[in-house]
Amino acid sequence: AIDNLSALDTLTQLDFVIDTLPGSTAFVFPTAQAHLLSRWHPTCLEAAYIPRHTAFVTQALQAGCRVVEGIEMLFEQGCAQCQLWTGLPAPREAIAANLLKELFSSASSHPAAEKMEPRLSPPDGLSCEVQQEIGQGVKRSRAC
Image (cartoon, rainbow, N blue to C red; front, side, top):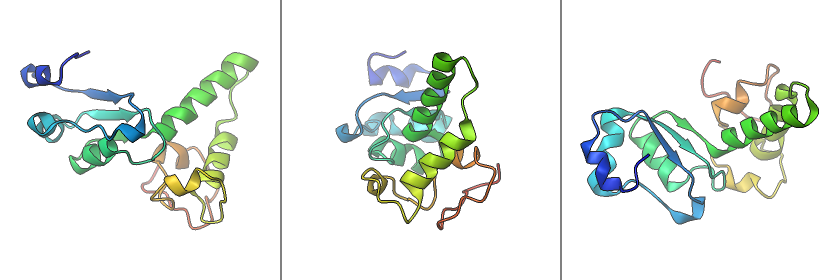
């Protein structure tokens, strides 16, 4: 863990960056350290899921980093909690299918759906969980 972003300049490797700030903070790596994202291409985890593409997610994607979006983290937390509470494996495909339907389909009227842009290109972590055709104009961004 790093307490001061200027300490990043002393690193010889950067594997992960975890952003736990609210999406409304507009956090990004400061200009002096932003080049490290392009240099090391760390996996970036974003805890915020509204908006879907926070300023940090946008910066990380532009730098070519692999990004685990907040909605993917929320999905994994929900699945883990389901298993802890029930003692049974979470119905991962059903949960993912419902998230896709409610947040990413063009027919959704869920209030959070408008903050999931680009809506018709959901995160791979959700779309790859669903074996059936996603539908409603939603496309997988890559082969799973």
